[in-house]
Amino acid sequence: MNTTNQKVTIIAGPCSVDNNNIDELFRIADIRVTDSSNKIQRAIWGLRVVGLKSRTSMDSTGNGMGIDFSEYLYNTDLLTLKGTNDNFKMLPSIEIAKRLVNETGLTVTAEIMDPLIQLPLYEKMIPKGKLLMWNPAVNQLGYQMYIMGIYAERNNWFIGIKNGKWFGEISDGDINIMEKNWMGQISFATKDNQFSFREKITMIHRGVDVAGKGKFRHLPVHDSAEKIKKKTGVKMFFDPSHSLGRFLRDQIVDQTVLAMKMKINEEEYLYDGILIEVGTSITDTEQHITIEELQRLCNEVAKFREININEKEL
Image (cartoon, rainbow, N blue to C red; front, side):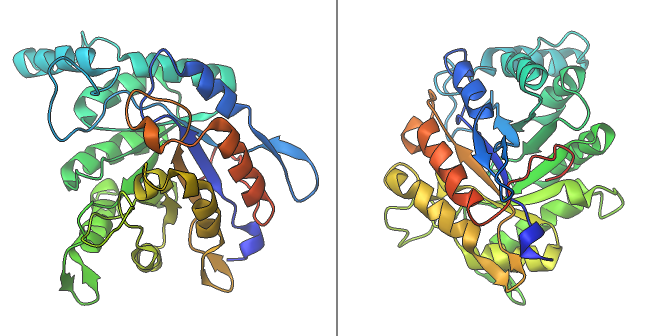
């Protein structure tokens, strides 16, 4: 792979979307950079539109659970009691996502907690090829990824696979438990390689929770990212927000630029993209960079790598 052609895909937006930060998403969509030909181009490939959040403990009032929480509970009751999704309530974040696709033309991206509740509604509202979905880091069960793979293949959507939060011991040859589970998710998403859309899959490295991580929220282990990219042959994204977190927030831009310079060898960069939290949010806003900082990040990356705006590829 020629590094001059290995473009960077940038996905940005708030940790969770709500009615107060929609305008920020439109501002993010408008960010431009100057490419290597001295032409102005868009910088952002996808927008984060997360409406249901993973949480350690459930808050039945909905505090911190995401804008979709109330409708999610209604739909869950409907599915478990009557066995049908015919009368599901539409999730508010998906209505926002549809508006963003229609008005910006960008792809929308979301963390999927419950594919059987969320994805039938995305399928009703979001066009083919216009959604990237990923698993929560706390969920490494392949069967949910299997369902996501079915919807992805049917709708020409993209899948991101986040690594688990816990590192673990070496369990099989030269890989540890986290790495083994991370790779295993691909086999579920692709029905053990029977599905034909591996090029629409990216691994997402978001760091791990280990002793001695210091001020990092989750310690980035770039060696693991490199190992998994080499073994799987799929693209690799970096999630600096969950790695550096609120205590190292002021370093997020500079550390992300450095990560985009990392190479596997002389001809190939380690990371193909960035998934980053930007703006304000009712959840985890302390680890968000500002829209102005995102502009600076895009400008810096554009100095040494092309930025991808092809909506049909990662």
